[in-house]
Image (cartoon, rainbow, N blue to C red; front, side, top):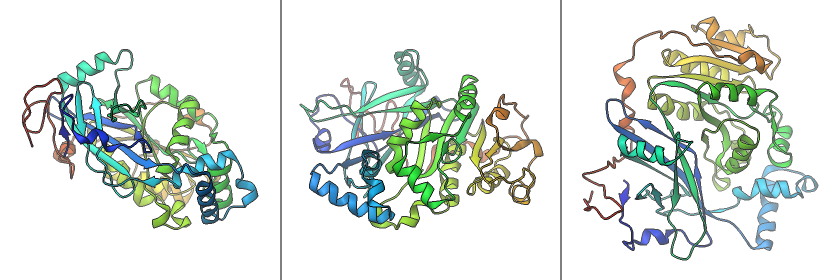
Length: 395
């Protein structure tokens, strides 16, 4: 449940972030609820403490190096330390982060044992529209920031991507789809993840920019762990890919073996993609992946279950299989042949053409507002309060 507090109330939630702790907010999305003048907005993030003592940091890096079974000579670089550091943080559980969004402050639910937290809130459409206008040229994102104790001048900021009920969205894998990772080769995967600069898959950024210019919105879904969010976000930004939401895999070194970094993404990806489809039952989706792991099988199954929503499936061929190989024919069984493409050259993907709807909307397609565990915080009434000092109505 989200609580709102008036400016100057002195609530101790503002002191929840200590000066030795840091917060990362992950790009999330907001959706307008069907049949309602209300937006549902999601906030997700991570609170943790970095290890600052040089001796302890060196010791923990040695442990992580052994965990990955990497050659010490190959990992004695600043790049390895930068990539590894987020795997070695002290996650902060039980923290309640307060954020400011527009004229309101929201207290989020407590952080989990891995330091991650999330909260869902509802705002009236007229208030969201006002915040969009205040955002200037970029009206598709709502910025917000963490509230910090008095005297703390740091800033921890995040954005919510506002996505309209209709239109075109792209759900894109990252590894070996837009970034060369070589997931089928364990040694190459480790080197490309921890020891080398990230390299873009040739031509993919240009295609994505063309799609974005035509109005497409983007969701980046990967089985890479959240600890790699910052370098991946930098790769997306500096590589010229469109901004989008991120959906990565939970992972803790203390709970997992090294094999968990490389296990099949099949179950995880479906768990992430399904809520996106449920959130936007009237939008069309393009699924983009590669042939290195299970993307064809995952996307084919999703398309059969959501035929009205899945517009196209594009698979980057990194295994040198023929487009009519038995694997692809089985993965995409019962789909229209023109609905899926196995490609070598990304230039062949643009421009996008749309297909007519294959079936009418189902009655259950518009029920995202009933997502489990969510508490509603509306613009007025129960559980809401204006920061400017309007009356407080407790939940």
